[in-house]
Image 1 (cartoon, rainbow, N blue to C red):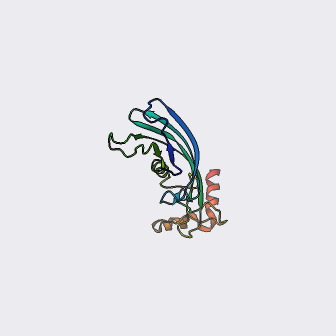
Image 2: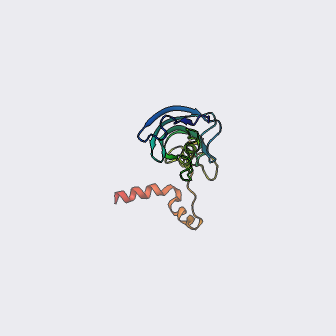
Image 3: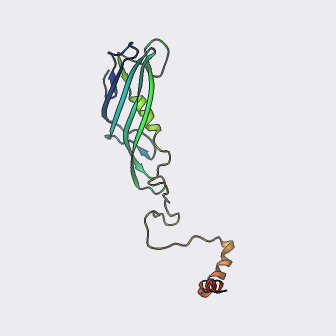
Length: 182
């Protein structure tokens, strides 16, 4: 077995209590993720992995650090954010019970485990900032960038008659002053 996510475990197989730690980086050959954000092909994935031999197999736990990129779900500007993903799984010895992950030829292949954890950690609705206002529904311009013109909020036509009362000859300000004086 070979590949960037394959680790040898020959020295700890069937030796409960033995442990090995590995730190390595992997360059992704293909993009991971299908939404508006993903881990791009060619990006680096830093792994910190602990392999522990237990009676049932090899317990793999660790973290993966990477950076996802894509677009904001509200205003459509490009974003890139770092993410740290934790994972843990038991790679069972072959022939005992049917499991999703098995030790094969004294090696463990972490690709499926890490990919699943990393893709599931991607945000469902990514935003450039927590209070991103998005796009203007009329103009389609980003509301995060000031256009220099202040736009009035749309008025419900049923209340438009009241607008005439407050805007008569600019007397709204003079009425406020009269209220303060009295």
